[in-house]
Length: 209
Image (tube, rainbow, N blue to C red; front, top):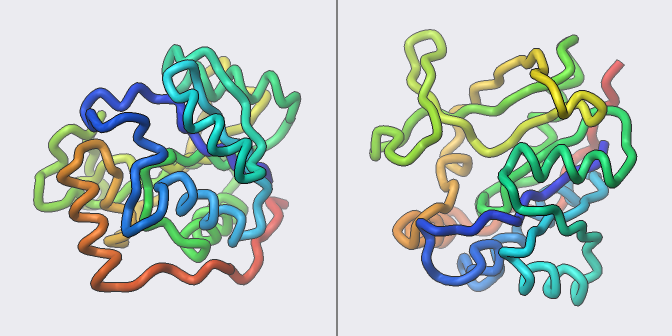
């Protein structure tokens, strides 16, 4: 499966330049996300936009495949990238602002996707102490209020329409740090300082049957 890292947002709430390049515990967030995906055995393509030219330059300098989409929005850029890549099949789509992501968490998502029949899967995480402030939506799973984690598996050839999806709730602190503000970035750095950086290698990923 190919992994797409979405790195084209304007980052208006962040307000400190291009968010994918923001340092978290000494490393750019996009580097941490890329390591999580490659550590799980995925090839990756970073999807940038006209709003993130320095991120595109950073990817080129570090040997990461990069595609510049129009920057119309998350869903629109995904559809554009899928069309430009000419792939037909599932894509793992991950936001570039998840600095605490690990290969093992990526593998957990891939195994869950392979174990169910639907074309798409979204990952959710229980709301944190902020009560889900700033989240695009909040839903309840068996009594647990949850927000999107910024990780999805979507079928490339069906990007233009609604995809029936499975929903995976993962109660994992590392997924709570979806960095949209400087305050959350500081919280992520504090978390990494307390827990240490994740291992760089996973155990191998499944194929969907």
